[in-house]
Structures are given as structure tokens and as C-alpha cells.
Length: 322
Image (cartoon, rainbow, N blue to C red):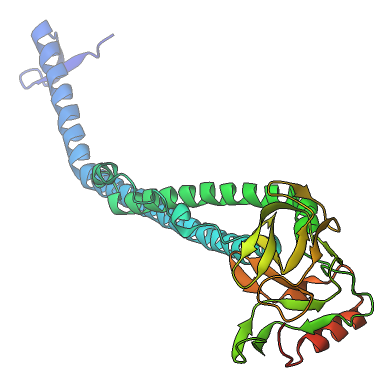
């Protein structure tokens, strides 16, 4: 119910009741509306700057937090790369060395680490584009390296499963019976050539023995060759796998044939005096990955430590090769 309005009457010195029309009511309502509008505009005007500054501060804070998180992610990726470097070092220099394997090829570790340049260009338009691109590149490289390391570890696992076969295949006994350790006539190294009488590299060990003395395979292998070779006479070459081969020279008779599988201790030939030889003996050589190595380091299976020291001493004497 609307309030009653009064107007002062100077003639009667009293207040007379005034009757309000609908126009008066509308006019009054319009005054209230205008007042409310003015107040609202003033409030909005004075609060706009505050709201605007508050929004800027919140946006800046959120932006800084996002940047900090991206940089933290980059640091974690760098730490992961360091851990992977250590894994790679152990793989190449410890695990693979145990099994006589070459390091995992470096080009395979780096294969496909260039990334998609068009994808990176599109990322530059994003917020914190440079950081996003840096993360994407580091992550791509890490993924490739992890994949390569996984492949490398698979091969190491396979080698570990073949460890027993490896141990059976590595040359590890003397090729003829030498219980008294008296049959080593010449060791590995520079020796006087028996025919040319000059110092030459002697790439094996000579064992004196009677013609017909059995020659044993020094490890499980496949017979690769039985042939005549200039200077060496009749020879047998065994392929032991895992990078190892052995050669037995000056033999008088073959007891095996190419392609045949032999076990450590099997008789493969008989001692002879064929080729450039001044007396019945066996010239024995060991190869690892195509290179000559000193055979004396591969007699560990049938010698005690004391006997091994004695063999080292005997083979080191500067005698003439046979």
C-alpha cells in the first residue's frame, strides 16, 4: 500500500492530504530507477580497475606457475638422460664385456632423433612455445634411446642364456697332452725363425711331440677348414663362435672334416712335420675377432695356478720357433 502524501496549505496553516495520480507514481518509480542506475555505474566504474588488476595478477601468477612446471619437467628429462647415460655405459663396458660382445652401435642409439620440424614449428604458436618445443625434442630423443637400450638389453639377456654354450666354446685347454709341461718349445712373441734365421713375430705356441700324437679341439666348435697352407703345411681351423677361432698347423693326418661339429677334447688331427718345420711339432694359434691373441691365456681349464705360472715362464723364454 503506497504511503499518503501531504502538502502544506498557507491559508489554513495546515497540511492537506494530496491524492497521487498514476503519473506521479510512474515519475517516482523512474527517479528510483535512475538513482539505482547511477549508483550501479559508479560502482562498476570504481571496481573495474580493481577487477582488471586482480585478473592480471591471477593470469600472471598462473602463467608463472605453468612456466615453472615446464622448466621442472625439462630438468626431470635431463636427469633421466643422465641415468640413461649410466645405463648405456654399464651395458657397453660391463655387461657386454663379460660376454666378449662389442658395444651396442652408437648410430642405432641415435637413429631417428632429429624429430618432426613441422610439428615443432606448429608448437611455437602455443603458450610457452619454446619450452614446449624443448620438452618435445628431449622427450623424442629419450624415447628413441630407451628403445635402443631395450634392444641392447634383449641381446645381453640372449647372451646370458647362451653363457653355458660360450664357456664350452672358448678355447681353454692345451691342444696336446702336456701333463709334465715339458713340450712347449716356443712361445708367443718375436722369435728367431728356424729357416730364415731372422727375428719374426711368432703368432702361436709350438708344442713338441712325436708324429702321430693326438691333437685335441680346445673348445666346442665347427670345423671350418682342413687344408694345406703355405708355410704351415696341413692345417685345421676351428670356428668356436663368439669371435673365437683356433688354428692347428703342421699336422700329419686329419681326423675331422669341414662342417663337422666337435667337442672340447675330441681328436681332430695328429701331430706331424709338414710345411716349413724343422721337427715334429704342433703350431697352435688362437684368434679373437680376427686378431691373434696369446694362446697361453687360454689354458686355464686344465692347469692349476702354479702350473699356469710355470707355462707362462716357459713360453716367455726367447727360444727359436720350430
